Image 1 (cartoon, rainbow, N blue to C red):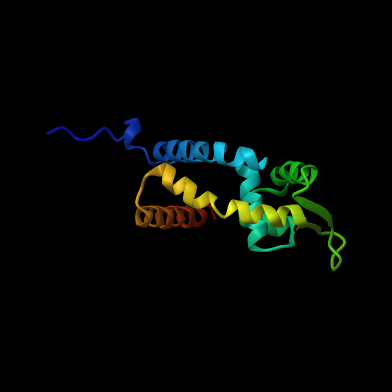
Image 2: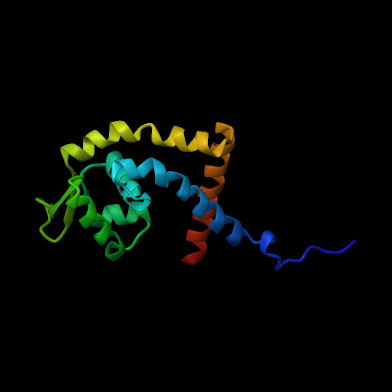
Length: 147
């Protein structure tokens, strides 16, 4: 019996994660386009629907992005009327990001997105929960390993 090829593409965790992420995010595109959102912008909105207002640093930490990466996303979301950026009243050095009324209203529409994506995947809900939990374990492990 031959041993598996440890360098075979299909045996690589990084390959499976990359392809799964790319193809899953692609499922969101036709759902988000009518809302005028890209997937990265949707993630920003999710973080703001969870906690509003937020500082740029808090938002960057929640999304695990650098503030410089986040800034162009915020500019586009502000230009479309979803958010407002301004200085924090309690700390002039901090940029505060706040949902507009339009951004708040968008949440009601967006509440259908997780179910629509789950239906597109044609996977049982419990499998998706298990997958999410496993991916969160990977995130924790890789975050710890990077320190």
